[in-house]
Amino acid sequence: MLETSVNTPCTVLGFVPSPLPAGAPPSNTAPANYRSGPYRLLRLGVDSLYLSFFGVISADMDATLADLKLKGQNILPIIRSQAQIRLGDHLFEVKGWGRKRFSYVIVDNWFNIQIAGPDSKSLPLAYVQISSEFLSAHSVLEAVAILSPLIAQLGAVRGEARVSRVDLFADFIAYWDVQALEPEAWITYAKVKRKYHENNRASSWDFGMGGMVSARLYDKTLEIGKSQKDYLKGLWAAAGWKDETVWRLEFELKRQVLKEMSVSSVPELVQNLPGLWKYGTEKWLRLALPDPRDSNQSRWPTHPVWSALAGVSWEGYESPLLTRARKERVPSDEYLFKAGLAPLTSFMVREGIADIYEASRLFLAKATRYHFEQSGFRLDGFDNYIDVKVAEKCRKFNLVMEPRNV
Image (cartoon, rainbow, N blue to C red; front, side, top):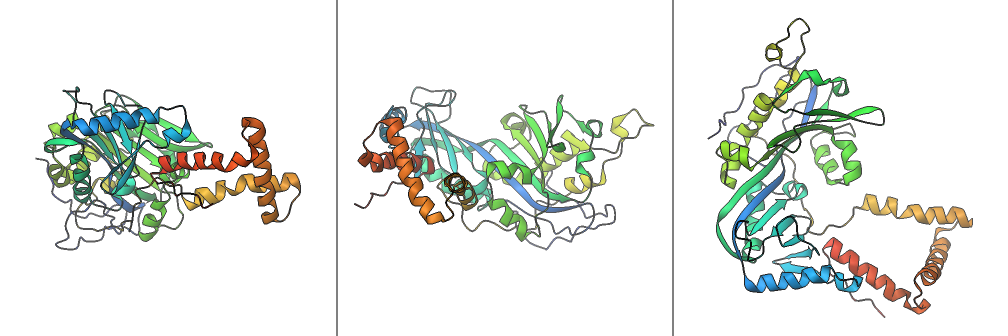
């Protein structure tokens, strides 16, 4: 088993970590209350978790998924929109394709599930990615307890889930020049390390991508502007964030290395989270202070901030959790009301209309005419056209289409 002892607090560049409260249980995410010094830790936890469930799909489920998969491939959008399956209280989209050797793929905002057909003897029944948003609302053990009954509906499951991959992370505010870090300062087992820039500023570093172990250090505030994971802002704010740049250090550990570290089951993973983090930050990757007088990198002192990051505790703190993670993959208000207003305001400028309500009515009328001319449907068929588009979105967002009032 991995060493799971908690590192004792130490002074790093003039700041001292707050003492651990006694008796607190391990948690999925755990911020330390570092308020001074070169960085401030906001969140620490499991970003994504990949599990394998072994067993055999039932004949009924195989037939159902095969039929829904064909619907997902149909040329008619209204037929494709019917490719949904309900497991428990989840409504999953059924993709019109498999993935690698898995026959079926079903997805919602919590789980991405790849399912093997009855003839796939060497594959697990299901390979599941548990989403980062769901793990921001539940502990790892809670997440697996919610997932397991859903997998049981697929067929006969043998044994407990096996951990195939885990992504560990720390989100922090840096009070030092992260962008000034140069490649020679990173000492790692990885053969390849890269530095990326965006808008003429350093945005990320990655190490050993695609290997059994890999790592990234990147500007998370920049990344969520693209991924729309706006829920993170509330969690950061609860830990003292005030619209500052947040950096994320993330390690990806796959099945082979986890097995070598005696991590196979979910309970073993939870028990060994401190040891996995210690392996990543102390043995596999280290940020050093280069000494031009010494050609032996192993003797270079560790950067004080890296020492602090490596020494954070995975035990003893409870970080803020989301009160709810939606099962549905619906877009955020920020996306809808920013992106949704853009074409309407552009239309107002083009048409010289100052009143948004007048513009909305004219916009809809001209949109109807445009689609009539482009697609050739009758003008009175525009409502049916919209119904089809809404049905497609319902499948994508894991929702059921409500009948239109007439």
